[in-house]
Image 1 (cartoon, helix red, strand yellow):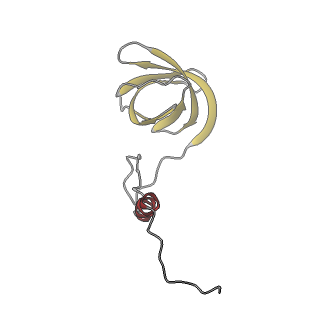
Image 2 (cartoon, helix red, strand yellow):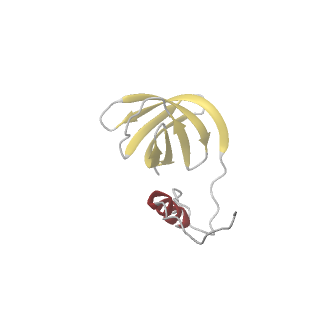
Amino acid sequence: MFKKTNTQKPGDPLADRMRKIAAVPAEEMIYSSVHPGEKRAERKQTFKSATVTTLGGERVDVVVKNVSATGARIEFLRDIQLTDRVMLCEPTLRIKTWAYVVWQTRGAAGLQFAQT
């Protein structure tokens, strides 16, 4: 009466595809210019208002979230694409230097100070 039958349901193609995608290991993104085995510069957490000026002369208000001797992490509200090099100005930290944009996502970027 309640006997199980050996009928198999056809597989769900979408579920099968999602399982295949999930089985592939995620690619790790490395933004740091520091090679394995080298030590990164010590970062100091901060929350300072600053200005970034692009090569085209556009000024963007940003917040410096952390800073080190070699660079800084900035965050901004406008969805813009920064140029490869920018001028970072923050008077209370005495920062006024050119920096390379090492990485950028929506609303944040990592800067490496240019050697002068």
